[in-house]
Image (cartoon, rainbow, N blue to C red; front, side, top):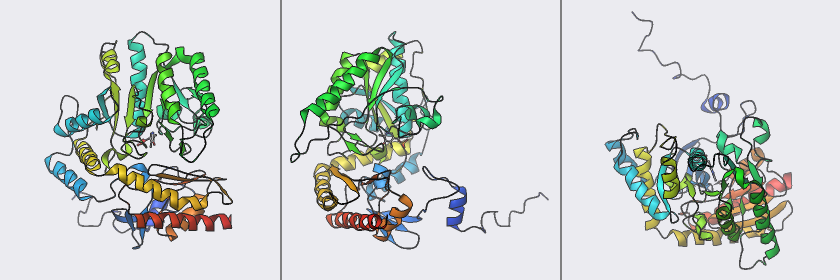
Length: 450
Ligand SMILES: *Cc1c(COP(=O)(O)O)cnc(C)c1O
């Protein structure tokens, strides 16, 4: 007899801990403490714009699972695409093999992204797409005989992911830089642009934009010899502060990068696929970057997948360099299941009247959140495309504010001093009204109590 009695229960099948207790004691959550875990809500299922909790309550989802679920959850077309692909093949390696889903996705990305981005690298997550973009820029400069150009220039208030390379170009003051000082590559930074995205009813001060651009020029003048690339989030700075800046700054950045022989990397992981009202945020400035990162909404929130696109010039130069190839190749590169769902998600987006949907959401968010403008404790309310931001005077206490939102039947996850929403594009006006009214009520209770 062997020591194992296969008829007996598995050690985890008669749990001593409830699900909630187990979660608290054993599972890390994003940016979480294992000693004083913040509350978490258990989701049993999700459909359309609703999350159904295990206790039966339903929440209207204002987050689209961090920019991803643009079509809502459990979408019949995405489900069908995933099921069909699953029955065909879920995964094969991409080294030496290729397949329809990757080719189909490549066709779509090349056709839809800004002109000139013709070479596609498929990666596993946003952070990895950023690592790939940084490595491409550095390998490109090396291959053309400029090995000194190996640093990145980034904007303060920027966010590009959590892996080592990506972290090195995140906001240096408010991010994690000091914790990892000495480990992260020291990169160059310029202050974030102060000129905000122009709105018809708000006067613009041209001197603010001019000063932003002059600052960028000065920085490039002083350190371009060390720079492989400028990396930025076009027009919308996401997790680093939810800021909307002037497209003319992006246009100037494109010009200045050319002038100083520095590549431009656009990180559209948050903004890509319609979120800001354009398919890609670069279109607000009618520019093409040299390298583009997409992720998040790429699969409509079904699974993790990202892509880094580059110009033919970059790809050719890298391929003719010392290595003769680009030095990267993740295990799950081009995962067929993810690629197939990404194709369906893109088709679904293009089949829909997404521009009208995003515009409608913009109007509803503006209308629903504007009553908060000027209230005590609230610094700013701003809306662009299907993104609504309420910036508080002080950092929000998530452990206090989040349960107040859940009590209103809405899922909103505040970050730092921002209470923000980026709903699925399919959210109805009624649900949007519930969402914004819920934010008003929860914030009213929160600010009255703090
Ligand atoms: C979320 C995000 C990333 C990182 O993507 P992950 O999939 O979380 O690794 C990078 N850049 C931007 C702009 C993002 O919003």
